[in-house]
Image 1 (tube, helix red, strand yellow):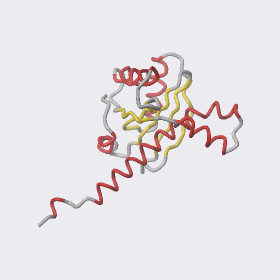
Image 2: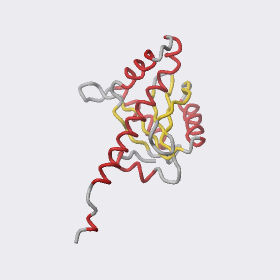
Image 3: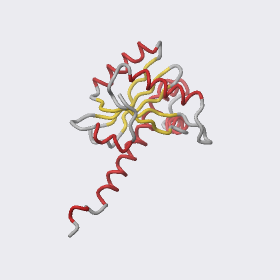
Image 4: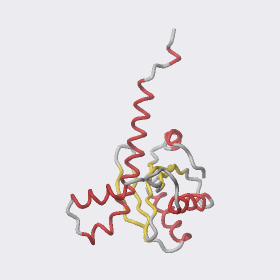
Length: 168
């Protein structure tokens, strides 16, 4: 498995594969999965963290069931652009997953994704208790939707550039 750039994602998502988004928390792993058209992020139930080997096995089984071809993982960058201990934990998680899977990972700046997810759940009138159980998957969906939107803009930009082979 490798860490790849967002520009390398389309090549890894052929043959009806989907893209997953992860939001790593200390107690849970939020998961979201794209549709096959790469338009929408759909939250999945959170994975309650126990220990890495168990968490990884549960996650890999879910990713296989969802036909995932690559994973976008939130990188919790500080507001000043620096990386702190939480970002290091995310990078370590990906390094550990590399021992177990060939799935490529792409890091995505997740600043304010949890805040945005919580605001959305509040607007949907979820109680505090219900929000607690859904916040990490909602944050994963925000992370994944950001990646999907970026892929759409890259695709649109690629289609608007002139084809150099047609120059005469």
